[in-house]
Length: 268
Image (cartoon, rainbow, N blue to C red; front, side, top):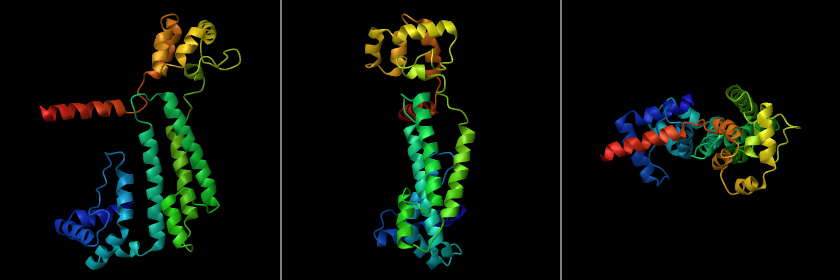
């Protein structure tokens, strides 16, 4: 990542270099004519920056060679290209996960499902990397197919293991445990499952689970609307469910609100 940032800064921090690189890309009809700046503030930035750099790696190599930059030798190194491809792949997958967690209808069950799935994928990818199978990383697998002598399986598996540890640190517990009754109150049996409820609410949950009218509504309404409907007859149980569904799982609503406010003030 450090080499990537240095390369981008070398080209974009200098106005002459930036214009020359743009002209080079235009002359050879490249897919893009500019690199992207990396920003720690924008959460999708790193993946997009690396992807653009990878797509323009040949143009970058030509430009750095012409400028006699000490960074040139990196882009002549197939192992570095493979490492860059891997970073593009893994950050693309992380960006896809981030985007999938956003949205107005997001709740702790949606987020927990996707995070747990990604943690399992990391374990699977680590095992495959140790077996030198990289087909789950599209860009990397293309590079390795053309350069079979390159071997970065150890570094990839090590990075994936570290990433899995970070996920375990950020998400040490499964918030769904004891709360699956919120997701489907008609399939959970309080007498056989840990529902993390006091006894009087367990009794209400049993009543809800046998209420055929509510079951018809459950299939037609979203989760939040369903529990609002339940509150008319079982207010205490519904309040317990809503309190767990209400907290923001991501900053999406806050950020979208700020964006709308900024757009409104700009137009005004």
